[in-house]
Length: 384
Image 1 (cartoon, helix red, strand yellow):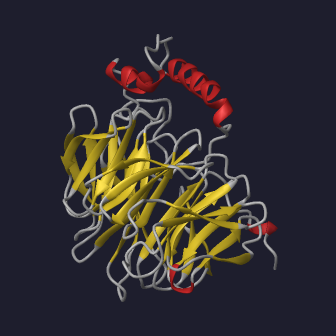
Image 2 (image 1 turned 180 degrees about the vertical axis):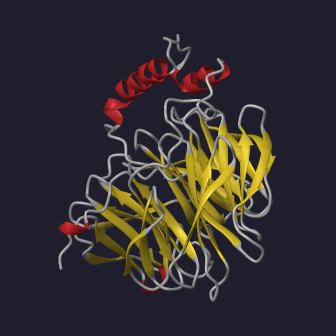
Image 3 (image 1 turned 30 degrees about the vertical axis):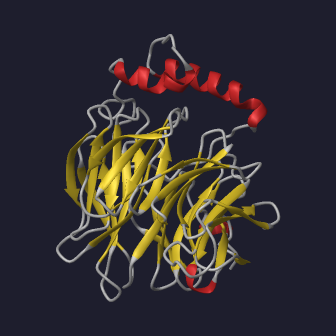
């Protein structure tokens, strides 16, 4: 799941964070809920019948802001207006541009340029770029909840280069440190996702068939969950009790109980699941699928069943990645038509499970990683 930034404390503030979260959960449901156990607060609320996947206070309009999309073959970033789909700007960001995230605190977008072993930082006001060298093959990328650290997985699809590690980039000075993600030296980190409090980075390992949790202060690895065949991406529930992981190798998503460190459900979803995105009620998990034609799936997390799939691209297209808006109403999902074809972005209404708009990428090649920012791009602030 692609995460927007949240202000959070470190370990000393964990209890305060959970208390505030529980109170916010109760207030947004329109009633005060007596929460029985913080770890189970969200699932308790869901069983009470509140379903913000189907009703809510928004009017269904597309969100304001911008959607930032990288093209892995052109080494390019294109910024779309989130409401109209119009192209605002395109610019080079490095060969093998694969994934992107934004730290609103730093005011920068960060792009993994896999071919040249760098992360390209893009100033959101001026679009000026700077290169941050990292270890070989930077792949997926996520910010910490407070936006102070950028997590980058490395050497995700090769068993010969590197170690099971992620790079941690300090957004203040671009300093890079490396942290081991698995006790299996043959494993390779693929999809990172931090916990709400920022104390744990969950990492899916495509090679190694493993999901781990890494303490972001000490580097301790706990838990280690196997086997998850070609584990691609993970997303934790807001109170840290459950973790969802895509298992690309067997076409399922796995539900992991973090109290017992066991896989408690396996739901078939289709061909090569990758991005996993929870709605705010956490009753629906949206999954991007890498097969052809491009499709996304919708999982009922209460009934543990696939609600259905939605084709988002025509014949000959392939699915890529997705990002969900903070209110859970819309998903932006990339699709491609191969290196020489033209891909784009599908805009999906999660409640109706329909494509409400499609944006054509302005060039050939494969659009892949993407991120939604609520902020509009101020072209008048850019350097001429």
